[in-house]
Length: 380
Image (cartoon, rainbow, N blue to C red):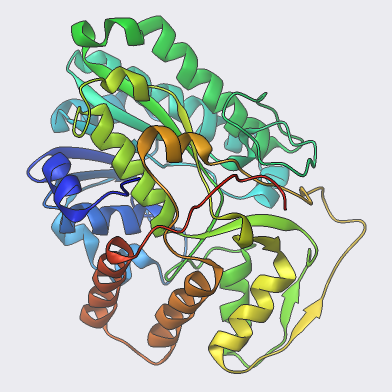
């Protein structure tokens, strides 16, 4: 199978108008950086970064794109920004991305994740122009039954907590807009190709969010404190942030007809997860990061009275492998090593140019790596 190459992605994005929501977030900043490397003309639409430092600011991305600081809940403003950009490709990443925050702010989570998705699709519809739209949700969109095998794209949407439910609901919004306004069978007529991407737990340099294990680890390590771990036995599909981003970019290319004569075949949902060996408990991630960092300790802070979070989550990526030709490239050890390398450089005082060059280098190394997916994504 062929994973995306620099040449293929450049063909899809060089000189193209690309609209990215959530570009100030962790994944959005990495995607924006990659699109700039590919020669895209990027317009970003998002709230200001909600962490300090933020990868978006650390890389100075605002000076290289059209930068809108605005809320996806503001339909008139979002519609105006999309119309001004007249995008050829849309990537929707804007979201309230934290499970635990959804317990504190459930209505905001729904407004942002569900209505924000509907607003962007409606803004695209109002332009009346062809484009490819990759709508990013989450692996938590599935009704999680704590099953051992990986969830497939045709399994029921659901969610115990408001965050997970909001992602399942977002998938239903995407499907309904596609069926109602952008029917796949009439793609050659209306020209709007809509797909969704569902990724596992992403890690990598530059994430500073609260209640995420890698930022929690780095904050503790840089202060010489034990890492507090609230769910050491929870199993998640861990992957470097470049893995799903490569999948989103490849999916967007296919929706544009690059590498296929049948873009309509890709107007569906796709999982982007790691190889089976990278689906591991949180404690393995913590121990591996400590080893890569060179020192550190951790404490088990399990709380039986804490809010519910899923204990087991696996993704099947056979559809992305068989249909898109996408597969994960970095295994668990490489993912942890590259993540630790980025944070070590930042901790040691790397300046903007150095961090920017490191991101660009990791993107290139990722593209140059060999694929690792070799078989079924079921439990061993």
